[in-house]
Image (tube, rainbow, N blue to C red; front, side, top):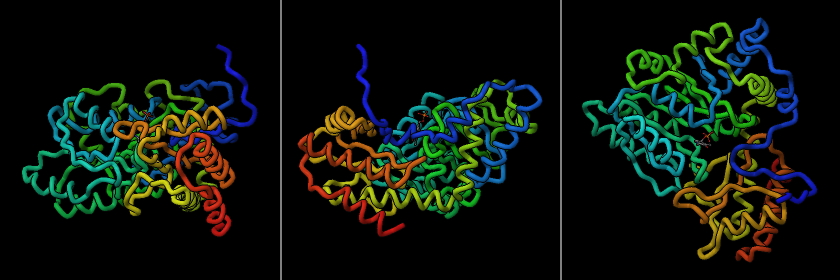
Length: 391
Ligand SMILES: *Cc1c(COP(=O)(O)O)cnc(C)c1O
């Protein structure tokens, strides 16, 4: 069936993949380079060095031609052995998927639960670490920004809990939907492996993912016994020394990555984070003015890259999203797992400015009206008032 043309620009306001800025599109739009030729090493070396500033790490970052899920697998297989216990926190859908992967790989995940309305339960993690006097737990895995709920886990608090119990486990953090949108400090927070992806805060198309690696994690890689081949850090780090890769990298995406990182550093990471914080606050004000509820119930855990909005009982979030796509040409994120059809998610991360936010909120407000979802008008106005009063 032929698709009807829709005038105007599509609004892609899911919490990833995000909109790719024109500068990045232009950078990708080049003839593919010989990845073993003399020019490639320069690009590789430059992008690998600049990336360290984004992760706030002095040590190495490796880049896989893979989605974020691949980088999850790389983090686990490079550092752990069959049967190892890993302590994870069920903050939402993505944390659950990572745990399922750990099980499939032959690890023994131990799950600390939440109600999907806040970040990781740090007291629960601390209790599990305290009880583990024989240090059977080899890694603590936390999703920094749980994209299914819009709740952030406090990595600094998790680190403090590990330090307080003097537990030697590795700390692994999924920053796929927070890196380059929210404050994140690999070294300062004592993280051992940071997992990230290209298609969210980094403003690139899907297809690249990352591991930032501490010295302790590198040491663990020497004795880890889970099978690994494609994901093995060692040949990657060896080739990266000269800016090259052991197998074909995502060449054109690397041009884009180089440009995206330059854009982030030009804006300044502090300013990038402040921009996201401001848009998230404006969005929450809109939601409250509509009389609707934000999924995240703890203000300390509010996400700055997305907001999940709960629908009143008896109303379908997927129905609302379908109406908004059909009438206003905007895609919003769906509810995942236990939140299916219960919430919709507004992505406000990446290459995103005030007017896009107001357009997004305006589309939602019109959608609420046409879909017959009970609400008060004036949410978009509340966001305008906030943005105009906080420039
Ligand atoms: C998007 C996302 C993933 C999955 O990444 P893919 O690129 O789809 O494999 C994992 N974790 C979080 C927190 C995410 O937001």
